Image (cartoon, rainbow, N blue to C red; front, side, top):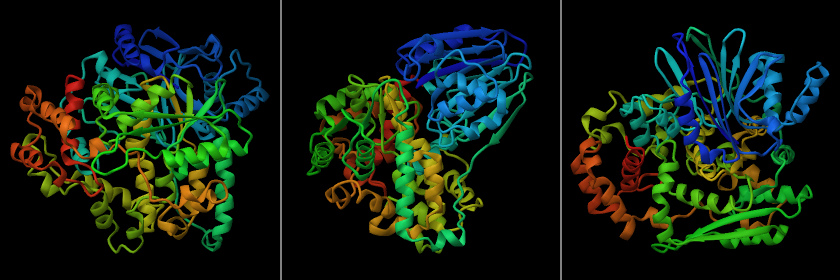
Length: 591
């Protein structure tokens, strides 16, 4: 896991080493173990390294293979790199390192852009061809690894974080009205290519971009998940699906143990992380370090799930660490948490992951985490109503959207309002795509390929990498997800959701973890804004920067402050926290 950045010019000018150096410096927390810059005429690459595989300097980046005429910067992990290496050696390729970065270089030389179809893992990379001067950018299937860029007619800059793009300067930081619409409506999910800033964009997941020396570009989407089912799929029993999922999960978890350093687990005490721990124990993993976090109770809501994480830790004999964060420390950490966000991320548990990662990084460099199970196996409450929905678009937007376009007109200041219902139009387009005819499948597809990418996955990457911690997500193994897509919805929706995964879990973990009420990362002090949290919010929205910007209509803010608990979104989020977090992020990054 690392931070990558670079600049490519199209007008014949020399790439700016100063800009690349500034971007690399901004990503120092992502890669505390090493740094490097490679500059060659119109191309300059920068890298910050977190050593996980091949701890020697032979795998330092940017990496160049002079015989092949290729250079690369890469962030992520290719879990099947040993198998690919053996295949490439069989083709006559010789290696000077023992890591996965060089495998990508050789794979690209051998198979061209189709190499990505062979990769099992998470990745964002950029390759420069010395002889053709062509540049190739790639991002993994689920967008687990981030990829931001800014572009003018004369050059393009890229980086693993939006903050790094800003550090290089010369960026249009005006608010993107479409992105703002998504943030306020699509539960803070801003799909690519948009970000909240007009001058910064995101390379979509599962995309390869080829850039010619003159600046012309061509994108290829190399993978799409397909929910089409055969007659055999429809006739397959729940028990068979359970056994197939269990075997696929064993493979996925095992793949994510590939490392030259120990790998731990973020153990929330829910089904997903508990299954990961059980499978590692089943595979003979000993001395496994697990980590849980808890907060103070607030407004009658318990701020930890220790009883469940303790149960799993005891059952499987892990080296368990319980981390408790008082509300005062959480509030103190909020500025640093917001600063670590590459985009405004409204979920309460950002600060939880930030503080958890801080403590975990004191013990270990790599963890497995349970993100993705709800989106892949149907764990959210809005999936069952979709099964009987005559109008899938209306059912989904009613459950997931924070507000309607008409209501947004009375909340956002007119200069910032999109001229159309951008969020509803986006979901309509997604639902109309081939490959998911069932309403539940439509919801699962948009959640796993859009919402998941730009909410839970982005959150975990940002908060862990703020402390030089690599997070791996076995539920997003693409072969596991392709299998899950073939499973008919009724097997996923039973038992209140994630039925087939719960069937798997019953063979592995105590029933108390499975039959409990569904939990989320609890941070009650932020969910119920009062006391010091309310004071912090007042300071942010009352600051001169917020008043000068004038994003929100005054009457709307007055209504929120008059009674914060009365204004809660359908997904149980605070509207006041939503608007405050956005302004907090803009101020933190001096926008």
